[in-house]
Amino acid sequence: MEKKNIDWGNLGFGYIQTDKRYVSDYKDGAWDNGRLTDDANVVISECAGVLQYAQTCFEGLKAYTTEDGRIVVFRPDLNADRMIDSAKRLEIPVFPKERFLDAVEQVVAANEAYVPPYGSGATLYLRPYMFGSSPVIGVKPAAEYQFRLFATPVGPYFKGGVKPITIRVSDLDRAAPHGTGHIKAGLNYAMSLYNIVDAHNQGYDENMYLDAATHTKVEETGGANFIFITKDNKVVTPKSDSILPSITRRSLMVVAKDYLGLEVEERVVELSELKDMAECGLCGTAAVISPVGKIVDHGTEICLPSGMSEMGPVTQKLYDTLTGIQMGRIPAPEGWIKVIK
Image (tube, rainbow, N blue to C red; front, side, top):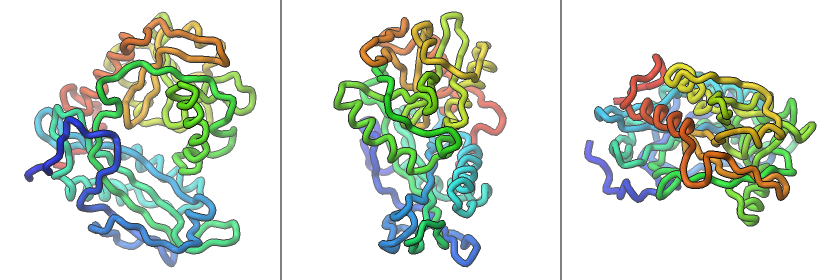
C-alpha cells in the first residue's frame, strides 16, 4: 500500500487524524460486535458519566515498521490485561482481551498507509480508551459505555535527540495507597496537570512523586516509571502498590537480565538513596527511556554521574536493545511481537 504524503522525519508527537478507528458500544449488559468507522467525532449526552465523574480509562501502544518491512505491534496482550484491570477498578464492563487484540489488528491494518517507514524515527501510536457514555447525575457507574481505538502517526518524543532532563521532587501526591495509582485512569493524569505545568514554569522537565504516606520513597512521575542504575551496575526499579505497571519498564527489566546479563531488583527505593545512584531514567511507551541528569530536592541538587550531555552507558544499552527488539534488528522473546502484516 502506498504511504500517505507525510514528512515522516519531521513529525512531532501530536495528533493527526487517520482514516479509520474502531468503536464498540456496551448497552443492555453486552458489548456489540464493534465496527471500523470513518467518523472521528464522539457524540454523547451532556450528562454522560465520563463528563460528570471521570469514569474512563485508556492505554497507549505503538505499531512499527521493522527492518525487514513487517508491520508489528509490541506486547499488545499486556495492554489488554492492564485495561481489564483498569476497567474492573472503575466499574466499567471489561472489554474482552481477544476483542481488544482484534481491534488493534483491525485499526493498524486499516491505517497501513499511516504506519511510518523503517528508519524514519516515527511510529503509529495507538490509543484505546473506554468511557461511561450514558447520563449519570447521581454518583454511580454509568449504564452504557463505549470502547474506542484510534491511531495517529507520531515522531520521536524528543526532537533533535535524547538529552538528559532535570526533575524535581514534588510536594504534591500523584496517588495514595489503596487508590487508583496502579491503573491507567484518566483521573490520575488530570491530577498531575497542575503540577507538571508548575514544574515547567519553575524550569524543571518533570516531577518525582514520592509515596503519599511518608514522602520518603520514590514512586513515579506523572506519566512514567523510574529505573535506576546503581554504581555496581544493578538495574533497580521502585516497588509500590500505587505505581502503574509500565509495560516498557517490565520489558526493560527482562532486557537487562536476559540480554545484558545485569542483576535486576524491584524494591522500595528510598529518596535518601538517590545520591548514590549512577544513572536514572523515566520509561514509558512514548519515549522508551528519558534519561535524567539532575534531581532537585527542595534546592539540593543531586547530579547523576552520567551527566547532562547524554544517556548513561547502561541506560543507553537498555534503550538500544529494547528499540532493536521493537524494530526487528534483535530477536524478540517469544510472544513480544504481534505481526500485523
